[in-house]
Image 1: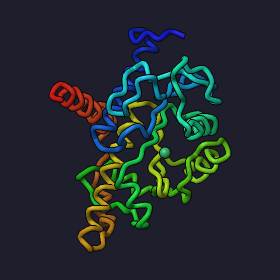
Image 2: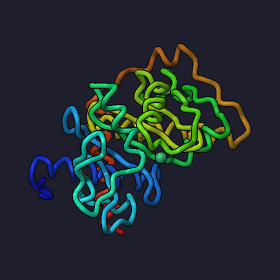
Image 3: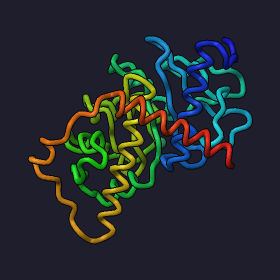
Image 4: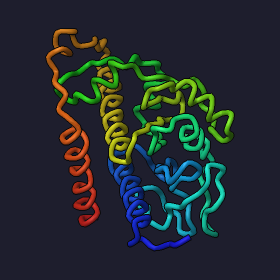
Length: 245
Ligand SMILES: [Zn+2]
């Protein structure tokens, strides 16, 4: 398998690597924990692996993105697939519409899970996609163990149902999308929602859901704005952030 980063496969690898760095920039991952994959076909995926010069998600380069089967075979020598590969494999196996899986450990998700903070639609126009996520309900996987075997991945998939996001208590989050861009915006918006829930809880006040009337008035701003433009912002922010550091 080619290690080229200029082929179409190389574009996928570069895009996943960039997304890993965006997760780090935005505080959804820290250090070497967390991973993103993109479905390659019905039995394999591109996934962020640990490489010979591993130094964390913030410094992910395209070479760390390896094509492996759902059973974890096929990485180039020196690259280790994540121990939680089953999060990705079992979602791809169970849900044909899933084209991208993100697993991260955002601190706000940890606090929400441990403190059992209810995740309600507590804001409106501030971030409409995040509000809708809360409105639809966010499943909570009640176990904090490493999802290191297919049967544990299947349990998570079961709890997740047909939802696109899942909070893993004492652990982190799993987010899916049809594309990398869609999954990334869901993860970033979920993070914004969970941070708001935690910050309100710190004030000691109860965050009530916004009224039905307000929800009714909130428009769907469309994929162009919610995904394409929104994600382009994060890509440019990363480029600037990396130039300055
Ligand atoms: Zn994890």
